[in-house]
Length: 116
Image (tube, rainbow, N blue to C red):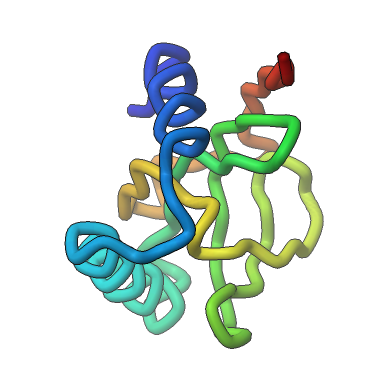
């Protein structure tokens, strides 16, 4: 399970990442894509949990993905109970989970990022 400590760590990772893709980032993105694709192909069996980082917020999400859209995907956010688009470059610590482990609504955990 993703924890609040992971949120803090992901915030610092996001702030320290340069615009160029590192080989490890490419490998991570490919792994995420495989896990997301598995959830898309088996929606009754799998969902995904991940940390999602935007400019001003970090949140833990549970999503049932259903379609690719370039470098992002569309999915039913089980936290917001609505359809959303998620960018791959904003995802950290993605984990494939059994759908039976996720009950909607999934409690969302968010924290704000303060810009100094």
